[in-house]
Image 1 (spheres, rainbow, N blue to C red):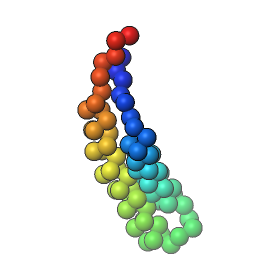
Image 2: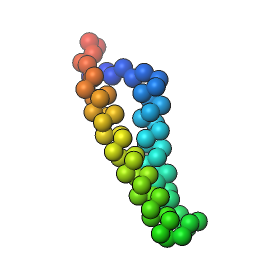
Image 3: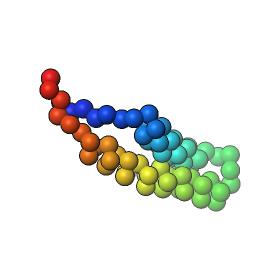
Image 4: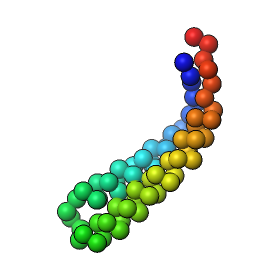
Length: 69
């Protein structure tokens, strides 16, 4: 089994990036904005969410340690 220590600021940053990804997907699926606005904003939020989550996940997985259970 592996354990990873996550500090509160890192958890908040990770949750924020996942939120941006979710908001982007939500905008892509909604009908409130015009099609062009929805696509531009949605894809921007999806890109920000994905591109910022990848380095954070790599950082966290790099700190994984085998636990002595």
